Every structure is written in structure tokens, then in C-alpha cells.
Image 1 (spheres, rainbow, N blue to C red):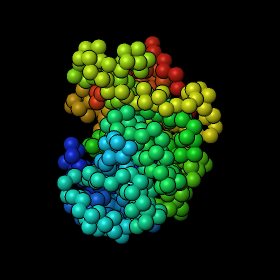
Image 2: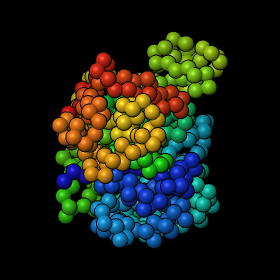
Image 3: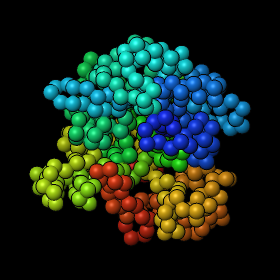
Length: 416
């Protein structure tokens, strides 16, 4: 049974996040999207944790549902932690996702952090002055079946491999705790094929999640599992990820990485971006302001890669699919912003009967033309075929994608 899981989101208590991120709204948007399992996000925040305990009840072992809900969406207890500390003469900043099997474990983690003087009330994604290694050690001593997953591993400012404050390997970061890091999150600005260039990640499970700061962004990246209903549980998900079970981990759903806001190098203030090859010619200096560029994900992957993209053995890896969110396809068709009334009206008309992932992944062209504008239907098919035009994102600015017949992005891993 195909289940789509988004394991990294936020709540209304995280900085710069929508106040619409409540348990009920998250559940409702999961129905619009076709998300079967969703992270709670932010379980270390005391007010959010209290809301979760009030709103949720256990459905299967370690998975929860909204009390009184008439849908099947399951919640799994998750949070993201910001570690800021000094190591090797540098200030390190990285984000870690944590998955926990039950509220008892969450309470123990929060109690431990509070005793250490960490301010859990300030932000849903708390800033903690612990190394990644020590954080992993503390959490796994509390509960060995927690998952510690480095988040959006390539983004420049807050990531384990980030160009501004990261490391060159998982071992450098986690030291003796490295064997307990079973997965990493690729982030919006990279896709699995880029990560396959690092042989050090061959035995690591690559997961993808939305890191949503608003309900509409849920599922913009996700994981696709094959789990029978009688086996559905936290333990099953834990084991699939830990063991990189390719029979049960069917694929990840990805942004086209060029759309991510840190794919290319650049300077937002200077409105300048460049391919890594061009940046290197300029010694990574912005030709406009003469300061150092923010080096993006593509640049950083190239720095650490030990093989070419085409030489990786794809049979060793979990496959993936690049998608463009439905609201963006509608927006591209109508030529208006995705938050416009015209786009929103069409979007909610469509997802009333067919969840977004079914529309993007499953429906054939004839069915699509029956339920929506023919050009929207055609663009969904072209998107599946990789026929897109991309202006890559850089330095915090999302890339711009349009769908047409004249541009072909090579996606050798396409499953369509």
C-alpha cells in the first residue's frame, strides 16, 4: 500500500511560520495533498506539545490521529533543532531533525533540555549550544529508537555540509556517533542524483521533506513507502529508514533542485547569480560588490564529490521523482501569482475530488482534461516528462520554473 510521508514540517510556534499551522489545519491540508503520514514538527515547544497532546490520540504504535477526525492521516512526533557551537576553530551551525516513538520520549527530551538551561519557549525550532555529536548522544541515550536526521544537508548557512558553517564529512561532524546516523535530508536545492556523487553517502538513506512553514507548502518534497496496514507503526518507518529498505522505500518526491533557493551561487542584494564554474573563474567573488559570494548547493556538492553524476550505480539507490507543486503549475498556466484568487479557486476545485499527489502522479491525460483546463492538463504531463525551463535559485531566492515544449531537462531517473 503506497503511503506518502512528509516528516519535517513546522508549527505556528516556529519563527517566520504561518499561524495557520495548527493540528487541525495540518490534517486538512494533508487531505488536499494526499499525504498519509506527516510530522508534527516542533515537539520541544511546550505550548505546541500541549496542543498536540490535546488534539491527537494514538492510532497505531507510535503514530497518532486527530481526535474525532474522519480521515486517515497519521502524525509522527518530530522536531528540528538548531545546533550552534564552536568546533575546529569555526562556528558551526546546523539543523537536525529528530523523530521520536511516543510522547513519553518527547517529555524526557524536553525535561533533559530544560534542566540544561535551554530555552524551549523561544522558538519551535530551538537554538541549542550543543555539538551535533553530543545532541545525538543525549537523545539516543534517552531512547535508542529516535532517529537523528541532518536536515537540508547542503544549504549554506545551517547544514552539516553547508558552505558557510558545515563540515566536509559526517564523520567530522558526528565522530563516534556517526554509525547511528542512518539518513540525511537532501533539501530543496539538491536531489538524490546530486548526492549520489558522494560515495560516502552510499549506505545512508536519502529522505526528502517539505520543511513547510505554511500549510500550502506541505508535501512539496516527501517520501513514498510501501507499508501494509497491519504493519503500519513508528517501528516500521524507523526500520525502513534505518535499513534503507528499497522494497518498502519506493521513492522520494523532489523539487526540481534548480527551484530551490540555494542551488546556484550568488548575491541577492546584487541580483547576481552564477554557475559554480563561473564563480570559480571569479575566485568566488561577486563581480558587482567585490565581496565573497554565497556558494550554493551545486558548488558545495561539486567540492565534495568523489565521482561524476553519471557514474553512480543507480541500482544501489532509492529512486526519485521531480515534481512541481500543483498551485505553481496552475499559476504558470494562468500567468498570475499562485496566491491569487484565480489560482486558489482552481486548486481547491481540483483537490476537492482528487488529492494533489494523485493529480500530479497518477491521473492520465484524458482524466486530467475532464477535471481541469486542457493547458493545465498538458503542463502536468510535460512536467512528468521533464519538459521545463528553469532559472536557478540563489542566495535565498527561489528559482523560477516554467513548463513548455521547447526545453528539456534531462532526468534519467524519471519513473514516468
